[in-house]
Length: 324
Image 1 (cartoon, rainbow, N blue to C red):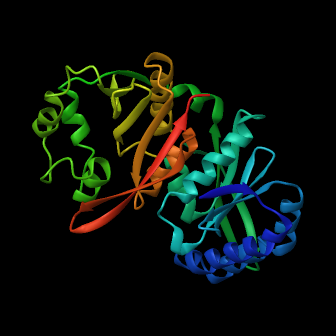
Image 2 (spheres, rainbow, N blue to C red):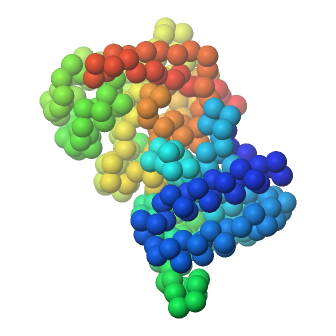
């Protein structure tokens, strides 16, 4: 996966992505006149100008541009992902990257929300501050939501803390797993049966909780448990820490909790445990987690593992981050 500033050569592809997405997705939500209005609004000339200004970005998967996003000052516009690549976390990743750029200069970010994207924006912490009126065609008026997000507030409201795992945490953590696929993405083949119970999780940890090479941690927002992961030494040299069993409360995913938890765990591994490198594995069919790890700074290495999960062979991508 690659995310970069768009070039002049990308402008035509961006236009194609935007138009294909509008023509494929928007008819489910809007009248034909409104769909045509969106199509004309995001024309090639406007896209060319944003690219020339250095305001547009593209997301590539295996060398192919699959998504795009643009910022104008503190305003996010034109975040589109090809229909066949939606539902994989690409839109969230693009939004997070644009917010980081905007946050270097502004405390508040704004956007105009189309109906297909409202759910994502609410999930990411945006609130409706007003409604706009768009006369997009003769006799046809579109009301849209004007949304905003306080980046300064968002950066402080999720002040997480990590503490050692307690046996009572298992009841909360296992409640976030709603399918066998969820369980396997989280724990691979470490548990034989589905669904697991809090007792199963506690039994898995019981034999190693007193060891000096295994550190299960729970993330809290205030008094609320919001995440969990383990840190362990995979070898005897103590130079490398391995992250595993990384999970976040499913009701708050996409709001930065996972990234912040991983940043705290990374700081703990480097500064307290004095590790020189941190590794982890993520399944290829779990792009949301993959992009979260990328946002923290993890990069793929050359190692690939395979696990038998649900009667299939799942590819596991190995990632690592070194101490600066």
